[in-house]
Length: 178
Ligand code: GDP
Ligand code: MG
Image (cartoon, rainbow, N blue to C red; front, side, top):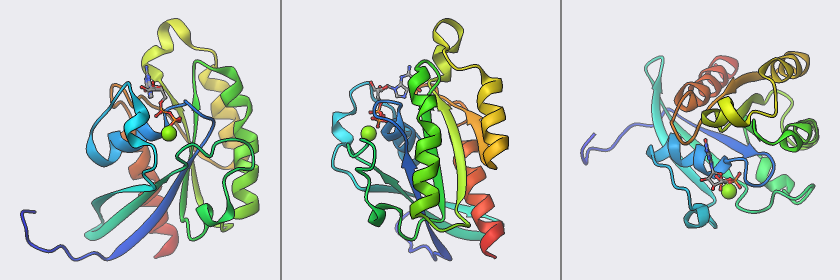
């Protein structure tokens, strides 16, 4: 792109939610900057990151919001959800409890966000699946189908499926809004 100004057709706000330490901030920096860090402190306080992508010849600026430490139940305020067209709900495939809490996060979304919001469930840390998996893929698939969510396992560490999952959300937003 160089220094030339880019025409932006749409700005899409997408919120990332889920329990603490499931890898939300790392998924975000993987998607926005293709970076990963084992020490996540550097991302604390960052409200959102952006990445501009092209979908069906439209230039779309994805503005992806991070809860930045507000993950305790009900601590995320309705302002966070305001105007969001997409949501990524994250759990850690090695921590059963983080999956058990997904229903609660989805309820929060249904309570605070627009009813047409596009929701993607991500089972993160798929790189640890072989030795540390605590949530069978089928359980998540079933839950996602039940709730009408998109679903993917992914790894912020390896980058596997991160791009695809975020693109799925953005493409779906594009198709429901145009
Ligand atoms: P957040 O609290 O949900 O934002 O979680 P962070 O993004 O801060 O990640 C929490 C911890 O999990 C950090 O130590 C990360 O390095 C680690 N982590 C995040 N994503 C992955 C992943 O895909 N695989 C592995 N093995 N570790 C990850
Ligand atoms: Mg974080």
